[in-house]
Image (cartoon, rainbow, N blue to C red; front, side, top):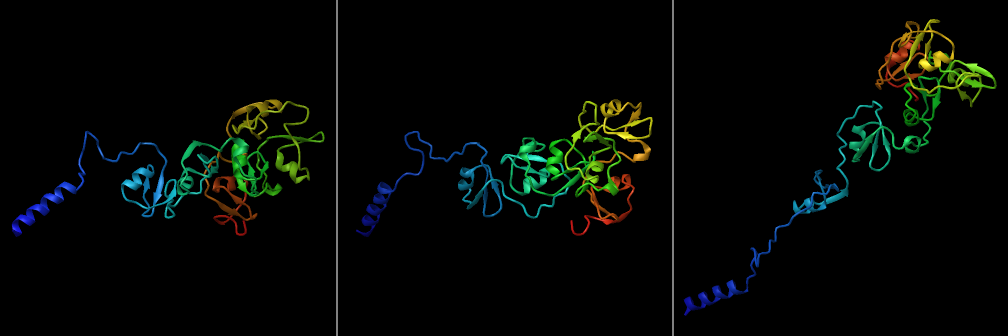
Length: 268
């Protein structure tokens, strides 16, 4: 009798238990699409999309790529535009913030830059509100902070103010002028592209167009020895005795300023 009862119970379980296999040709396997809408899980892993995270049984804590606070980035300014339409100093920094990069360069020219006041001095002697605005105009930065007359770039990139021409914007600003027009007075202006040439007068001009408009003969491409060396666009700051932070030692040497110490000047 006991044996019969056990058999009946066994048959009952088989009948009422649902099947977890394939039934009527249907496949219950979960499939995720390959769309890239990354999410970050509590264990610090980035999944291509929510489906893959759920499939792995991971707890989702945020949308986007996981941020990695341990990632050490260089401070070189090689701007990239993120998919959030914001400009980041370089690709590494964008990655740390969990932002996918859409393209190199600043986002949409000036429109992609903030108006944050963190002035820099361009190689053309003009002061820009921040590095992003300088980069949006393709301008190389010589030093952090507003251009100073004591360390104005030794490059001829003339500007005109009230009928008076200045070698570059730095000298105009030092003379008390806040606005000016690009180019020497009475001549058509040239682009501000930095492609220096050395003229017969041993002065370095911003580019060949500016030299020609100035009526001087070009000797060769590049900086004149009197103006120093062609400097790389690397951010390896040094502080000069003039309390100005230069982007690297090369710009410091070109400004003929002695080094105080490596790094950004205290207080900047």
